[in-house]
Image 1 (cartoon, one colour):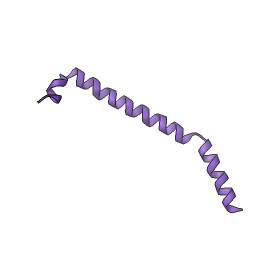
Image 2 (cartoon, one colour; image 1 turned 135 degrees about the vertical axis):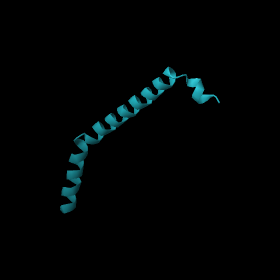
Image 3 (tube, one colour; image 1 turned 45 degrees about the horizontal axis):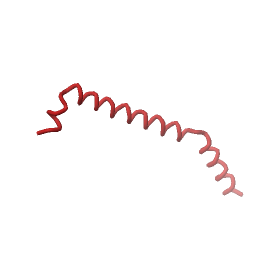
Image 4 (cartoon, helix red, strand yellow; image 1 turned 30 degrees about the vertical axis):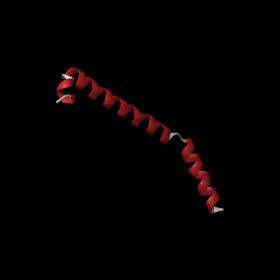
Length: 52
């Protein structure tokens, strides 16, 4: 009986959407960081860093 209550609580926790929100936020932050680095490269003469 205890195992059933634990599994039901686990299903309720998965359906709350906290993991999905965290995933969306982490992907958004990663994309923003990559875009800012790419913009910085284009603003600061990209060939100086890539071609030596």
